[in-house]
Amino acid sequence: MDAPATPGDWTYRNGTALFSDPAGGALLALRCDRAAGAVELVRAGQVTATEIIVRAETLERGLSARTAAAGVAAQIPSRDPLLDAMAFSKGRFAVEVIGLPTLYAPAYPEVTRVIEDCR
Image (tube, rainbow, N blue to C red; front, side):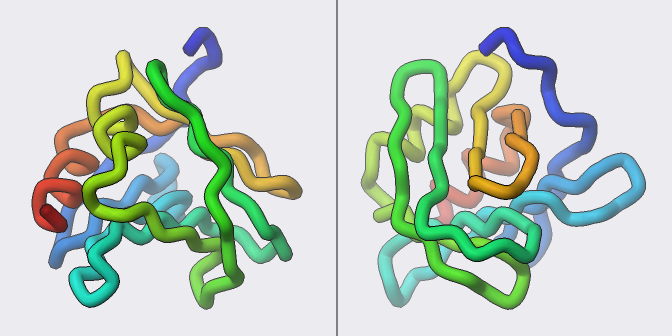
């Protein structure tokens, strides 16, 4: 919680919340996968990883990850308490993938909107 926030901002479009750096490069995406009943989290970057660690103020967990076209992806069931911890985290939550810099993304309304879309 003491680490500085990663520079960037969230946008929401077509059911996807996208956290981008100040130059507009995508860093993190959250979208509802209704068919799977889950929120898909995608950390941009081309690395081979088997786990994404999400750390929020009240909860942290390692998620099974897979390689995706846009980076490394994991699914979080739509009713998982981890999503609430991310949305209501004081200030920011962290997303860690070995081989990539840790992201400290602000817990802005766009995050909550994707979660609500999926419930």
